Image (cartoon, rainbow, N blue to C red):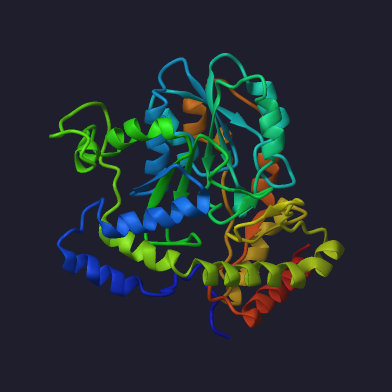
Length: 381
């Protein structure tokens, strides 16, 4: 049988035509026509006041940290079960990190643990929508009800096109970051975006985004020349990559429909065996529409994961684990404000396995992966 890779990026539409047009236009740096067109689609989808296309999701988070003017003495609460960028962006600005555990349903931040961590030093909370399924936003809002000064930042790298009770993921916090890395639903190789959900942040964000200058104001006719105004960096996405991104965004409806079929194909094929074998599949809470970013299975015993993955690999099926808890990493200990206990993160990290997931994965392939996984679990467990 042919191998089934873990991921396989797809040319979904007019990406290459757009790239050729961008290359021929004479404007290949950031801020071109394709950046404007892609940003407008993202603004409409998320409801953001403004969209700044960046070189990565990490860069978008770093820009949000700069906007908050974080420094020594400030802390940011971050889930332990996430990618390093969710914490690194704020540690780079001098803030210390408070690692929060996740709750076992959505694998998002645990509101109860968040409430325990809040103190006068907390400036921001970073929420992550794992697998494109909204975290417990109602619980997090309740925990922060008496702390309106704490800024909510969404790491929505998995969440584009998902919803929480009719609110788009990426539109739930003051800032949100998106990813267009090759493993995401919408891709351009490497890229990201910062969503600004409050209009008052836009003017300064444009300055920090454009190397500390007011060049954007100059282009808008608001000043007669531009110069250095503030700190900042070179965050902008090349218009060539934005052209590729636009080609993907134009096909978003088709992409999302096919990813939904993959997700539902796995869920249907594994529902019966999961109940029999003690496997935990993704849970989508009522009122939430997932972004269909990935499909995971929680195994009943951490010791079975490596041999199960080995058996799938022997059949040409690529699977992988996911995040190693940040609170227990060398970097996490270095940048933590204080030690915290995150037992659910530790447990989930040890038992989770991700299945192949990409736009062109066929029903036959999802059935083959599901059957091979069930057989491997029965053999090993």
